[in-house]
Every structure is written in structure tokens, then in C-alpha cells.
Image 1 (cartoon, chains in turn purple, red):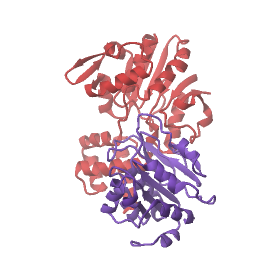
Image 2 (image 1 turned 30 degrees about the vertical axis):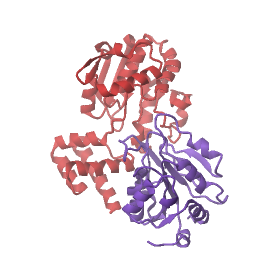
Image 3 (image 1 turned 90 degrees about the vertical axis):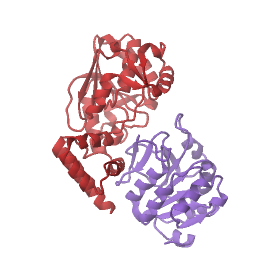
Image 4 (image 1 turned 120 degrees about the vertical axis):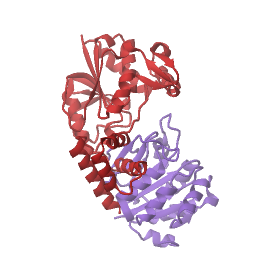
Length: 199
Length: 271
């Protein structure tokens, strides 16, 4: 569904949303996730690049900003609705076909561990067409390949408009690799999420 | 395409098990798939079936594949706060035993084995401790046995050692030559390295403390339970189990057979 509209996109059934972001990601992620309707129940799984040599405080930061449950994804944990999950620092986060998490210490991908590509590729296997992938601001190329795989599996792909991103490299790289379904500013991604349907 | 890939991976793991008795059939799917797809590139195979044929007929290819399927993810005193917690919460109890057995399950290339030996030495326990270090990869075990690590890792290891409450100068424990360091032979006198699989083998000894870090994340839930079962069976009354800081007993059927000692560090004690 290339050249699709936000309206078409919001009529699809989405069972999980995977989000990748790097430099500038905390603010961008806040903007799309703050003030979602109370009824918003789709699990949101995020890889946000942070230094791996100290504990990640992302769950604490977001717990006060969003209405959903917020936690760090744990190995073998089944994915629950209405929950925002963050990949722990220093590990790749994958989604298994039974829709639970697994962690791994394989070498960094695109200099990153956790890697957005790893999360998105495994999520595409697990959720197929019922997955939405969102790539936000960042200064590297992680996520472009993963987003392309989500699209191959029939999932919905959304990239932040590079012209409005704090760092345009990452969204621009994704757009260059494969045209996503939607290229949107943050407020429109937020509006789309607010209308998204789930099974 | 994706579905047939999953079938081919399952067949490859069945073939490896039948031919070499290495059981990867119950590993976590997502990371195993990445490893197999990487192996295709590495061996220049177009399909998983052609890789399977190569592996079945050539043990040397299998050894290379084993190196790809087992993921070395270790450093000396990795997560220093874990070792600090071992010093503060495990060592005082270990000191009450006249002789000790410690098991490093899935020891990979041995970094953690030597870390524990140093810690035990500084606590005056090494002489009365037998350390069992086990892994499924013979090449890794051979490296571990030698106690030789690349020089370029030493800066990280030294910083970790200091953060882990090290009591001496880290350089006291090794001699440097060329681009590597060799750890002191006195550290390895009571180490036994052995081929042991958490997937297929049984308990071989009663132990007081088991370290099994960054191993179980590669197992599916069923295999994790088997491994937790082995640990539970091997540990003596009130023995200790150390996992890595991102591993959890919460989703295992053994969750209530262990109690947390330091929850943050995933240090547990048999109930």
C-alpha cells in the first residue's frame, strides 16, 4: 500500500508497534506517545540507542510521561497489551514467534546493541502484516533494513519526516532504502496512533 | 519464504543433533535464525539445506558452525557490581564450608572462570575450592584452559576488576607477552574444564555456587527450565545461583524454588 494515507493506515488492525530512535529520540518518542487515549492498548516496543556502559533510565523517564504501563523488556516475558517496553542497554532485543521477548549478546549490528534492525526483523516474523514499524530521529543507519523487512511482510511502515527530525540521517536512510507507507511529522504520527485499531 | 526458512532451520538442528549429539533444537528462535542466516553467508551457501549437507559430511564445517551458533559474550568481571555482590553476600557463607565446589556453566572462553578464581583467591578460598568450568564448544574450552587473553581487552578487564572491589593490582595476576596476557598458573590449579551440555547432560557434582551468565537467554522457555532444574539439583542445601543482570527466573517454573539474595544483580539462593 504505497502512497497510502493516514486514513487508510488507521483502518488496519495492528497488534504491536515497534519504534526505533537514536539521537533526539527521547523528545520525539515523548511527543508521539504522550496523551494517547486511555483506550490505547497496543504494545509499543522501543529500541532507543543509549550508552551501554550504564543502566538505562528510559523506563523511569517515560513512566511519568505516558499513560501506559512502562517497563524494560525481560528475556522470555510474554508481550502484554497497554504496555510500553524498552530494550535493555547492551543486549539485542528480539520478539519470538510466540510473541515473547528474548535477549541476546550477538555482536553489535550497525554499531548498535540493541539494534533497531534486529528488533524490527524479528517483530516482522512474529506479527507479519499486523505490525507497525516507526523510525524516528537519529544520526546513524540503524533501522532502515528492519523497516524494509516489516514492509516485505505486509506491515505498516512509518518514518518521521526527515526535514522535521532533530537528526535526519536515520529517517532519510530508511526512505532511501525503501519508500515507507507514510512519512509524517511527529504530531501526525501521534494522531495516527490515537486512531489505531487492534485485534 | 519465512515459513520454509523456519522448517529448514528445524531440520538443520535435527541433523546436527543426530550426527553430532549437539542439541540446538530448543534454542530461542530469533537469534538462532540470525546465526544460521549469517552462517549461510560465511560458508557461501545459497540455502540452509545445502549448509545442512555440508555440515553433515564435514566435521570441520560443523566445528566452524558451532563457533557461530555459540555466541561468546563475556569479559572479565563483566557487570562489576555482580562480583561485588558475590563478595559481600556469597563469600561470607562460602567461608563456612571446609571445601567448596563452584560451577561456571557455559564458561565460553573462560573470562568469568578466572575472574571468580581471582575473587576466591583474594578471599582466601581458592585453595579449598574446585572450580568446574563447562561448555559445549571444545574450541572455547581449549582457550579457557590456556588462560590467555588478548592484550587489547586488558584495559576494560582492569577497570572492571577495580569496580568489582579488587584488592590487589590486577597486573599481579598475569604476565604480558606479545599481544596477549597469560593468567597466573596458581589460579588454574583447581580448575577442571569439561564438555557439558545443559541441554542433554545431567548433574555431575554437588556444588555450592553456580554461575550461569548470559547462557540461558539463548534457550527457549522449556530448555531454560531444564537448565534451572540442573542447577537446582546440583546446588547443595541453600546453595547460590548467579545469573546475568538481564536474566530472570520470573518466567520459569523454578521461580519459587529460588529466593533472591540481591535481586538487582540476579543473585539467588536455593530455597
